[in-house]
Length: 473
Image 1 (tube, helix red, strand yellow):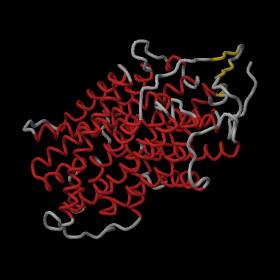
Image 2: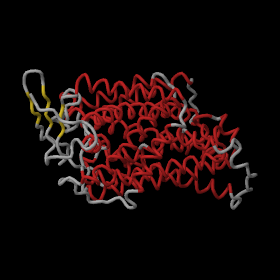
Image 3: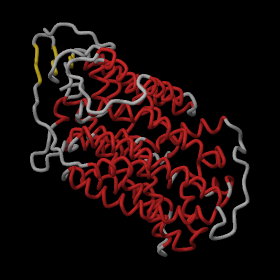
Image 4: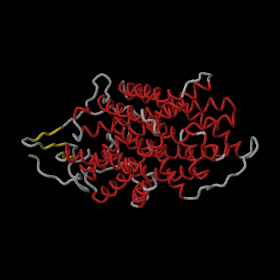
């Protein structure tokens, strides 16, 4: 039998190798799997994953919903979410350069805080990414219908979910054929998407300011008060999940010491700026109440307002690209979270099998895509978004705690290429802000998120409590 080992804070700071041991009733099995995923992603690929994932919801799905809750101050909600994301991106960058392994936040937390925390976070990351991916795919379905409508092909709204299901299965199969293929799609989509967005938002900003048209009548900045700014920030935080997804593919990044921090911090700064400008342009076009009535595809009417029919076509096509890139990147990241957890034997080991032809974790991809399709069938956009935010905020808070623990203990193997500026204030604020933002979510999302976390803890006591994780490199 393997000897007992603590599973609390700092339990896994000893050792030099990521050996995983599992004690069973009558024997002991030691798992040593040296297979690794190939490092095929560069800085552009990392930025494409981060930017491509975040752009989808924040710009093309949330403006109408957010304006309905907070008015023009929804721009402040996005800015607040960006500050929280940046406070977490910096500690995540340090941990990722010290432990450039697939799994991202799960890997960091399990090595710093122990097996119990690792199991809960690893499985919660799986579920959180599944909810986020389903949310992106439902948005994709809406924009697919609107794109066809702008081209003169009218389809009923009942086809939103079937379209989302078909493309969800397609993205899963694409990722099975190789990470490089998925990255190439991501790079191309994001480059085209950014070109469209910069043009539309620049023209819209000039028009809203009266430099190329008539200035819009100013609207009261906080028509519903200050509290909705916080609740809206909790809702739209799903828009910032992309930067941490870069860390889940750290094991496939070239020059991780340089590229991981640049990709994570850079993607937050780029996308946060775009979000704030988008809300300004959108509320300047119609006002909060009208924008809210337009729902998930409000930006289509914003594009038409500023640029006529070409503007509407540009936005629906951009929305299609954005939700496509978000879904594609999220399926990739979900599978890497499953791969990392199963490789550590916290899930059955067969889930970490790598396809010999394509070099991808095909079983993990199936475990990512399958649950996504089930959730897509519900079509519950806001609940999907908030549950994803809940689980990721827990992850982000614990990432910051993990950095504080590792810096305090400084194990021999901990040698990051990037150090968080403003330590320990930045990780402490990141942890506090992440946990505090959960309190502003709607009760249904809190209950579902908490139930999922309790279920993961139950899995730990049932299956994984005798797993020992040692070291990090």
